[in-house]
Amino acid sequence: MIELVRSNDPVLISFATSLLTEAGIQHSVADSQMSVIDGSIGAIPTRVLVTQGRLDEARRLLADAGVQIEAI
Image 1 (cartoon, rainbow, N blue to C red):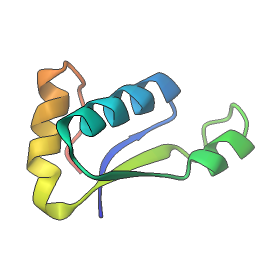
Image 2 (cartoon, helix red, strand yellow):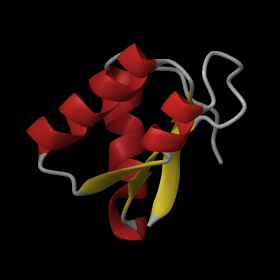
Image 3 (tube, rainbow, N blue to C red):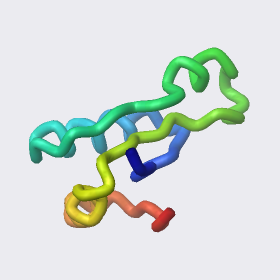
Image 4 (cartoon, rainbow, N blue to C red):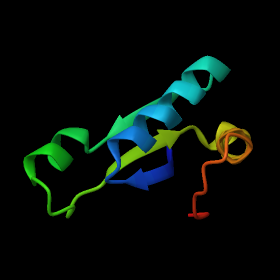
């Protein structure tokens, strides 16, 4: 799986995963537990991962929804 989004913003992560779910794009959320454990220092961001074959589609989906992400 390839990283699509990396953020310490739980609202952004929730919104991104909701969009992916509605679009039927398989995804996984990584490091969410570690992000909570580190407290508010933001040392370990949560990551949203998608399959390589759906990466471009997922990027377009988020861009169309107004989510600005840096290409990784």
